[in-house]
Amino acid sequence: MEVIVVGGFLGSGKTTTIINMGRYLAEKGKKVAIIVNEIGEIGIDGDVIKRFGFDTKEITSGCICCSLKVGLRTTMNTLVNEYKPDIIMIEPTGIAFPHIIRNEVELMNLGEKVKIAPLVTLIDGSRFKQLMKEVKEFAMRQIIDAEILGINKVDLIEPIRIPILEASVQQLNPKAKVVLLSAKDTGERFENFMQEILPDIKGTPEKVQATVAIGKRPEVSEPQETEDSIKASGVGSYSAEFAIKGGENLSTEAARELTTELMNAIKAKALKLNPEFVGHIKLFLDNGVETVKQSVTIYYEDPQEDIIRSKEGAIPTFKILSAVSNVDKEALKDAVNSSVKDTFEKRGIHVHKAGHEHNHGEHVQRIKGIKGRKE
Image 1 (cartoon, one colour):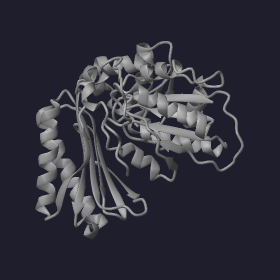
Image 2 (tube, helix red, strand yellow; image 1 turned 45 degrees about the horizontal axis):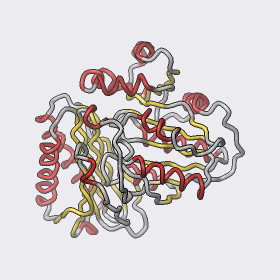
Image 3 (tube, rainbow, N blue to C red; image 1 turned 120 degrees about the vertical axis):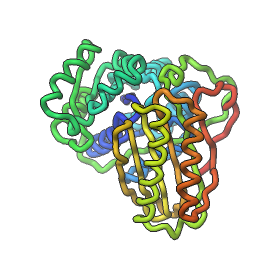
Image 4 (tube, rainbow, N blue to C red; image 1 turned 90 degrees about the vertical axis):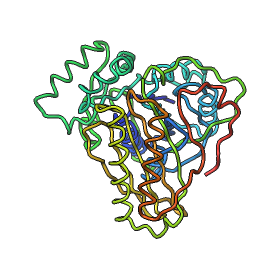
């Protein structure tokens, strides 16, 4: 069994890449498990992966980016002993140090048959200059620790700039293998990327779907913190889930208009907090039939939109995850909550908080003993 850790800063394209990797491996007949970790407990990335057609299995994980190593150990043991996958992929949050996650897995003594693949860090090539300006020390740490550096989103980069970018990234980590890729291209570039990670990958074209381990926080007794990557990142973050009263009457087109207006409102307030921010603001508005996803990863970007079919039996909900460089988390929380309130109320739609809020940077003992909610 192989374990692959795919890290990278917020908005680097980890989730889309993980989806492509899962499909690639499943097509080769491999049994794949994916452990997804968000900044908060809202689980937006897990929702994305589930709605792309992968079978899901809820397994206790925890916030492996900062403190709950016990949760990751429990998840890994459950997968290895019960699900018995050929490959486990771990997607840490964008403000984690991926090598710490990989090191923790190595120390679990999961058996001689478990091998750790080279550590992968994705870099959003279209934002590289801004990343080096806004979160240089943190991004450098992720780059330097990697064994494979995937320069992602090359379709958004002028061709003449790509060799210069490759050289710059290679200079930062001369020992790493640098690979170009794009979420829109799962052809030769993606094949090369996978061959670098799993050079001996073989399989038969048998239909096997991936299982996604996206569980919530376990009850733990002695959580230990190895290194405060959240503090090191300088990113303020806030996530929340809202129940929507009357959302079942909200058409997809109306949901698109609402989410665009809301994202622009949040972005405007984020710009006042930091005019040149990088990070990731993601929101989901589910009307029970379809879900409108909006995303912004940098100060100059227009909202990016996707429409995803809702899971069966879904009720109207709104989820948001915001992570913005060099801002105070309480200021960001206020900006998000006031924008949500104003935008929904303008349309006569009532929303109220549901589930847990989660703000990184709090002392680890504050989350001691919290049990995950059931979906």
